[in-house]
Image (cartoon, rainbow, N blue to C red; front, side, top):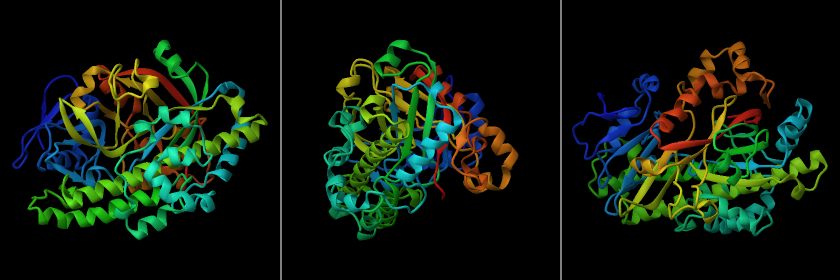
Length: 473
């Protein structure tokens, strides 16, 4: 794949046979080398061959190889285009939620942090395949939740309806239909609400270390030295099974509609076809599940803080700042047209005054949450009007440089412990976490600054990790 430099931090893939539109990657010179270490560029070029794709297909600074569309990929399709499960991802609506507090991080020494971590782990099951602590309740309300999202779970006592003002899409994606979901997916999902999962998912206790824009920070409820909590998880086995099911069935659909697939990972169907509508309906169920999942986890960890600190939950000032989706396809208006925007490992970032902002953030633009790797800083940004080039999308994290297996084989205990520094983590065996070590990821500062330099985003705050909770794969 040949890259053509088209300006600062912007590269275009030279047109390959079959490409209907351009493929553009936004990376800094320091990040370009990573593009040649996997098949991410090839996957972008493949996406540019699909019917109805809108110019251009986009790679974010954290781009790396995935299944179908690369992680860190954005693909918009016209109404007469296609929808692809591989352009959304396995963990549908994997996303991040940030919780602010009235608490000062300096009041939390390591023994207290350990105590809170232990209580959160008791209340929020972590690891692959774990069942929710509220499974007796959530199994009964499962169908309601997948059709109503965060609102449905709040109505069952998990939070406040005001939380919906600070969740992408109001915590609910229209068009969900459980009839489009397999029984296997339903069986997996109905017992997993309120669970964290494994892999790169985490709950992290953080300190607001730097403020870059005092006015925006105040509007987001942030202050210097504040204790915050970040939740990173998605639709668990429910969304994974939905993606698995449709990644297979859409191969046959593509053949039926005479779509020439450049790779099976981009199996797709016309948006307005029966198969396309069924995948969207199933995906929307997983999107709503994930919003509800993060809502339950937030409720449970606030209760954990309350119990450990011996204070009423309402006295802690723990409220949602924002919740963003990373893996999703949804209808949005861009360039005067209604487009189906697939974001896979990418975050929506609407600028000030954009009509799709939630009312609470209409004047300043909603927060875009960018988690770093375990042990490194996370960022709160806002998008600018110039981000229209990316369909108002930004990166979703740092982006991997090593596969999980490569990280496990090459990173030593000494390297892992040095990279974590003073950050607490919830495992005595480093082998359980080493595949998520900072050394397996790109430099978050370089990744974030790539879009800041283009004036696509603006920094609001930098969050320093204090303690991180992860689950076993």
